[in-house]
Every structure is written in C-alpha cells, then in structure tokens.
Length: 288
Length: 261
Image 1 (tube, each protein chain N blue to C red):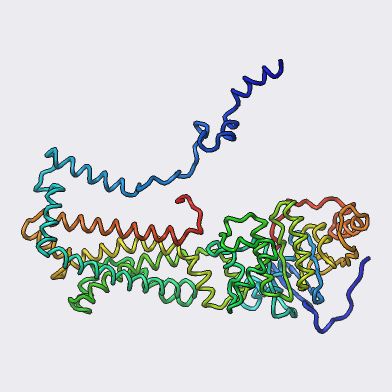
Image 2 (image 1 turned 180 degrees about the vertical axis):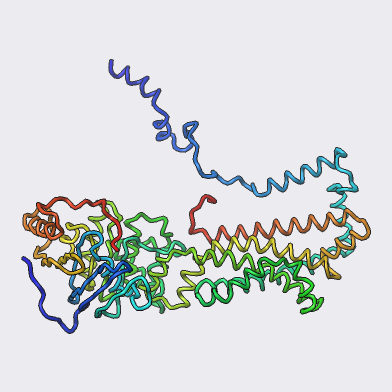
C-alpha cells in the first residue's frame, strides 16, 4: 500500500528535484540566472547587419531619397569602380599606414606615461597634469598649432593621431594599475621581487584589463583623428577622397568613405576584443 | 610544563629586543616585547583580537615600514635571517599567473621551474602546474602558497593565520602537511593563530601575547600524534585558555577571524 502511494508523490516532485535529475536542461521555469547568459554566436555582427538591413529596405522601397543617402548597391558599385580604376587602393593604404603608426606611437607613449605616473608619486605629479590638460583640448583645436610646428607632411598627421590615442591608453592603464590590490605589492616585497620583475609580473598583467579598455577607445580615437587630419590638410587618404567628393557633390563616394571608416573601426575593435579575450583568459567575468 | 627560555643564542632565527609599536591614537600595540626563536623551532603565537599578533608578524616580515610610514611609530631591535618567507591568511596568488608561475615568482636561474615543480609535488599538487588559481579550492590555493614559501628554502617561515579561512576538515589536513614539511625542511616557524588547538597540535612552544607583551609561555611536550582527547593535551589547552582570559576552558569562538591591528 505504501509503495503504491509513494509513486504519484515522486511524479509530482518539486521542481528542484527535476533539476537535480535532469541537469541544466530542465531548469525550472521562472528561475532566471542573473548574468547575461551564454554568448550569441557572431552576436556582435547583429546590430550592424540590422542597420544595413534598414538601409537596403528603405532604399529598395524608395523611402530614402538617393540624393540624401545613396542606395547600398550604388555605393557597392562605386566602391568597385574606385577600386578598379586604382583610386581607392592607394588612398586606403595611406590611411591604414597613418592609422597604424599613430596607434603604435600613441600606445607606447600612453603606456610609458601611465607606468611612470602610476608607480611613482613624483611621476604622477609631473605627468598627470599635462595629460589631463591635453585631454580637455580637442585635437581639432590643436591642429593649427601642430600644423605650424610639424608642417603639413606625414609626421604631423601621425603625431596628431598619436596624441589622440595616448589619452585613453594613459587614463585606463593608469586606472587599472592603481586598482591592483595593494596586497600583491606586499607579497612582492616579501618575495623580494626586483623592480623589473615587479613591473613585468605584477604591475603590467594587473593593469591589462584597464589597458584593453583603453585600447578599444584608442583604436576608435585613431580612426577619428585620421578623419580630422585627412579632411583638414591632405592630398591623399580616404578623408581627402571624401572631401573631394563633397566638392563635386558625389554622395556615393562620400558614403563609400563612411562605410570604409565604419568597417575599419568595427574590424579593429573586434580584433582588440579577440586579443583581449585570449590574453585575459585567467579572468572569470560576466563576459564569459 | 611552563618553561622560560633564558639567555640568547648567537645563531637564533629570531631575536627581538624591546620592540615598541603604536599607531596614531598613541595606544601602544607592542610595548617592550622580547622574543627569541631558535633555528628549526616551531613557535605558535596566540592572542586575543587586537593583541598585536599581526603587528609583530608584520614587523618581522619587514612590512610595517616604521621608518617610512607616518601612521605607525616604533622602536626596538629586530634580527631575522636573510631568507624569510611569509604565508598570509589569504593565499595571495596572482590570478594572472598559472600555479607554477606563482610558485616560482621572482626566482631566477635555469633550475627555478624544476624546483617549483618539486615544491608543488611536496604539497601534493603535482600535475596542477598549468592550472589557474581560480580553478583551485581554498585549501589547494593555500598549499600553492606554502609551496611558494618552501621553494625559497626559508630559514624563517612567518605564517599569519594561514588556515583561518579554511573549513575544519581541510584545516586538519593542512596541519598534517605543515608538520611534515617542517620535519623535512626544519625552518624556524612563527605561526600566528587564534585557534588554541591548532597551536598545540603544531607548535613546540606556544606564546601568549597580552597587552603588547609576551605573557604565558608553554612548551608542548607531547610526543608523536597530538590528540585533542589526550588529557595532557587538554591540560595544556586549559592553561592557554586561562592565559587568554577564558577561565574554565570554554571554547574559543572559531568564527572570530577579524584582523588584528
């Protein structure tokens, strides 16, 4: 009799029982996990693709006047023509070179300044003020002076880009460095770590999360500065191509330039995020 | 049962004379403390919260920077060997270094990694060299911290409530491990703890810190396995509890894990 009675009881067991038996798959309804959940495959492309979809749909339906915003297929055709005629390739290369060099020099300068200012009170007293001052002056306002100082050649463009890159790298690396648990410095003292080993094993790895955040701002900032220098004073590059197109009213060429900037920006940000995930694999955060 | 060490030995592992430490409120934390620890001797330091146990340990570890730091002032004479290792209550592993990297942190030379592997094997963690610290349990992390100390072949091992954050079962296992490691390497050990039983199980000599000075001092003359149910063990416990101000041998609340000033 008792055996018969326990049977239905077991079948209507509380949800916790099901979970224990069935694992994650049969998680009881209404019990939400608080993290963002599992990653959506290629989810980072979803937003940009939606934007593209609206553009295609709107142009096809005739809602978007081609004089205001060229249709995507016209832009694609123009891009192809520009590439075929050999006008896009060299400009793209020149822009990419300016971006890369400006980024490299800016990151190096920002890192060195962040370490100097982060590890020494005197360094902070000397370095931090000027960097904060530079931070509040937009690159565009600095441009006339930079033109006077460095002329109109490539150096000036790279310096301008590097100055823009330096700021986020400095700020976020410095912040990351200062947020390192003080107990690790104590540990390093008891282990008698040499200064070089302390910087290499404790300070830099500990500041890496901050550095990568700065890096994501830096790549974007590098492209932004590129637009500014190429549209103010240049005879080559994507910005110059767009400036010229603006003079002749070639909306499609302008859009080609914009789309290129967008693609390059998205690609470089994705690259930073991929490297970040690899390098920071020791962490366990809501990201994972 | 109570013995008092007399004069100094030239080769003492720790030699402290007239140590004074006080913080900004001018209440002395340590007042005229004298302490000698012989080479290879396992000494446990008991004391209530705020009795200055950790202050003493930090002074020995060279972490209190009395000369540089504005918020502590002190005088006194401290002599420690060159090779001093510290084990903290938290394992203090660098989360961005793998287990082996943490053990050999700051060591140079070709043999460093091999010695690190050996030390890990000694604490029973062979094969976990490539693990990240977050993948280990609390007890395993503390064993890595022990390996990190041992690989430096310390003459003096300072341990600041090293098992305070572990559960009771893990703690018993760690006691056995620490005893075995001490037998093999014979460093002088100064263990700060608030756990009376832990002190009796591990140490050759138990000191009680009271009002900035060393009060009661007991030699633990128990042979072999130290069993808390042994009447001799219980007698030592009762005496120590009395020295800590708990007459009648009441249990020390083990939840009390706050840091001493």
